[in-house]
Image (tube, helix red, strand yellow):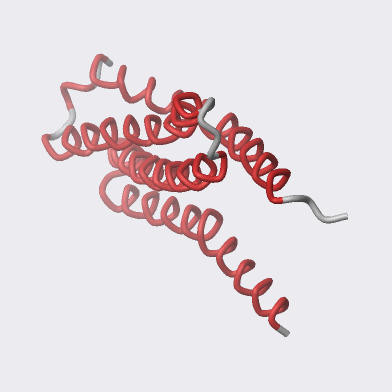
Length: 155
């Protein structure tokens, strides 16, 4: 038996909120780490460039956390108005923007730490690895599988 449109929307909303429960704690931990980094003993040894990247990382990670929290707030504000389809659609977009913003913040943080540990070459390698993993696992694999499923449905 196929699910009704209402059942599908209810399921999608539950799935979205569960995915947020998985993503948000890691983002919050990263943000907490970034917020205390300037108060560490070796911060005064960082270059202006490293401080700029750390600042960008803090802002991007904070934005990512806020975007990831936004679907729950959006749902709560709209909860009594109906329109779950709208909540799912907007929440889906906010989640994707949040994870993309978080990925950029993570990239900046990894670059700064890797540069302090391994120099510029090590930081470039670490950044490239992070970009490759995020691009492959978060975007390329799901999009490729979606295209493959779409082709199979149309045959």
